[in-house]
Length: 334
Ligand SMILES: Cc1cc2nc3c(=O)[nH]c(=O)nc-3n(C[C@H](O)[C@H](O)[C@H](O)COP(=O)(O)OP(=O)(O)OC[C@H]3O[C@@H](n4cnc5c(N)ncnc54)[C@H](O)[C@@H]3O)c2cc1C
Image (cartoon, rainbow, N blue to C red; front, side):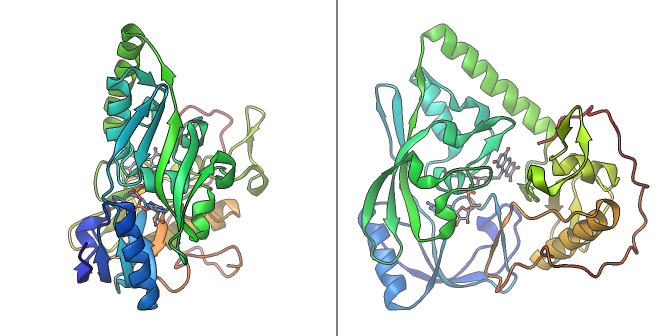
């Protein structure tokens, strides 16, 4: 496996922004992963694991370390379990399992990314989480390059949460327990997959975005109650601000399809996305007294480039729609 130098990350992430990485490699085997980690250790390099770049924003100054982009792509079936390497794309795994009469994962249809990135954030769609299906996995230790097998508990999964986020281990593969069904039930599941894909194509922007930019709130972070439930969907509050398709900074703007999705235009910089996201945070603070936090992962930045919970000083210098809390929850947010 070749370790390359000064590779642009711009075309390797969905925002299509950001600078170069000092070193870059594409491991295909467990041994390649070990070679990559040993190289990083020898060169005292920071490490960034890149999937399809569907949930990241890369600094305009790039990443001063080794970017490892897993290209291990095996899928193996054993009865009702399926094991996929970290470099396998989510949709590829869904299609493969459906073609083998294994159902369950189809709710994640059309979510871009790899099994590595999906496990890192514990992808979710409405009430379904990847952790509902994952039963065990193989991970490699960043410092020792030792590969260990672990079970689901190790991950300490939650909403947008997994042990991988400590960045001490990287995912090599993951095993999912699915449901073995007959041809008719498989046909229904395939229909559901196709319908979800159609819906998502209509509902969300399909390029130059990282999907939902901010994570939803935890119940203890919000006061608003609708239908006896805390309103935790960040898109609900963003919609009320009237920013959909309206707010922009430089070449980054809020999608007209979804208030929690930032899209970039030609020649956008990552700094445009950051400035726009900060604008949104300030609007939320001014209108609702709460700051949304990013679901998007920041790569190559020294500190988190957004406002954090200590942010106190804020000004209201944007033209806003008035805050109109509603008791109706008509739209569907995720
Ligand atoms: C249009 C659009 C729609 C989306 N819709 C959804 C949605 O409905 N639900 C949802 O949950 N997400 C959604 N997302 C977000 C994104 O698809 C997921 O977060 C996905 O899992 C990212 O995978 P990736 O391979 O691109 O990871 P990347 O963006 O490349 O990386 C994300 C993080 O995962 C880490 N990582 C990647 N591989 C590994 C590994 N092998 N081991 C350890 N860490 C690793 C990276 O270091 C990084 O910190 C959407 C994104 C887009 C662009």
